[in-house]
Image (cartoon, rainbow, N blue to C red; front, side, top):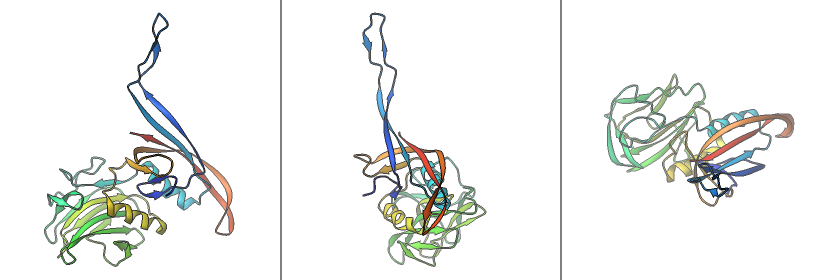
Length: 253
């Protein structure tokens, strides 16, 4: 088990500290008696990573900050950040992979203007009537695709054009659930972790994340903030180069 994982993805850390945040203000009465105004307690964790290459720093920043959108189809088709469909089609239903899902007619599509940029990763579940099962699909902006964690030629009915994400109904595949758009290109090493996490549970409602690992006794819902970055020279893949050491905070919510 890693010391720290966010939505199942291990995050390398070299040091950290925990801070307890008291909600409410303690004070003293005029008589000097201590008055406890604490109403709740939350935890905050501050971490530092080892020196990392620039491409890894970029995706870690996006992961920690909770960048991206999730469409869970629980009661509506808004994303976790409140973005509505750009093209309103499809019907919602219960009994999908994680509760609510969306059905589309063959040839019909639904899209969201997520502004994913030139480098992106998507995750979603699509029901294959041919296989008689829900399939977990990952698409990446460089053209790589995975179905159930195995390299695949199929995009699972999903496409990204000019930063907008769309799903389209096709023969044997008209039902979708838990559509995730991330505005960064995850490395290959993350794919098994993404598959394991997303096959077992719905993605967290970004920007909220699920933090787990040895740093805490239980999984914790958090908001992440990347603070400072320190540029350092280090050895990577047998050569010297300049990398970055990140400092970030996770706040229990």
